[in-house]
Length: 402
Image (cartoon, rainbow, N blue to C red; front, side):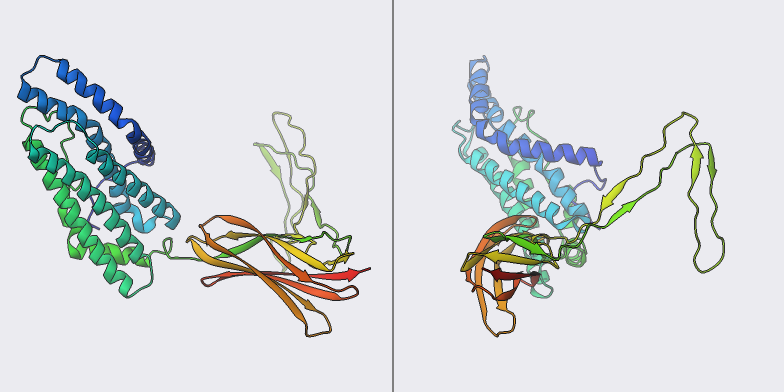
């Protein structure tokens, strides 16, 4: 695959340091004006001729901004190289970081108050930062389209990525001209642009990249919901049918690095392995027995699955639900429905609560109801969460007693 910039992949630790620097850059842009002002004052106090002072002052003001901008190139390069093998959430986080940092740098460039040595210098600096920010936004749009549905998504992805390449190449061209307009005073500025291999942004290379992104199993949208917890309000006065905890016990074992004795059947349909006994040369005591309790359900359900909850002294019940986005894409319009079906009758009462947006990995607490109940009736409660093809459901029994 054609690469963005140098073809070598930076080591993991190096890439992590780059990301930390980019994050620090986004935060540091808030105080960049103070640094620029101090640098400019120091240059003005020097004894250099006025034309050279103007150029040096402008370089001193622009240098921190352009150095921070240069830190974004390795991050974008890593996305260009590793995008198809990344996890979707990690890739989206990198894109968000690039968008935020490049946008802040563009805004900081527009706020530079120091007079440039020429109109051309001011125009070129603005073009560099504007084209880089726009290029990042177009890259993000192209990747999002490539990771979406097949068909029009790939076509749109290619259009966005080609447009991104044009803006990024234009930014590099403007940056070279900016350096040329500051003769003798551009030594403190970064020398290179963002794109070292323009061929990586030709249509054929970009189409191959978009197809790799679209076919990546780690980037494919996987919507999923999970109901983490369900409880009743008011709480049950009694719970029937609780299953006893299942326990397993392991026998004591003494470890060693020198001697092991074991016996096992080498043939037969059901091999049986005898306990292993070893002796430690360091005299370690045998490992004590360990006991584990097997969980009854993956949902923290109160009352637990398979039991019957008894409610008393109430004509309504509310259902507290914690729902989690267990997929790798944000979900919108997550609807949580609690339905009470009275056993032996066709009557069903239901209530619904909705979460407008739930980020990947995020969770939300909801209180659904109230649902009307009557004394002496037996019910089956079904809690269902659904959004954009993702569904999760749990059920439990409850009786309403006097």
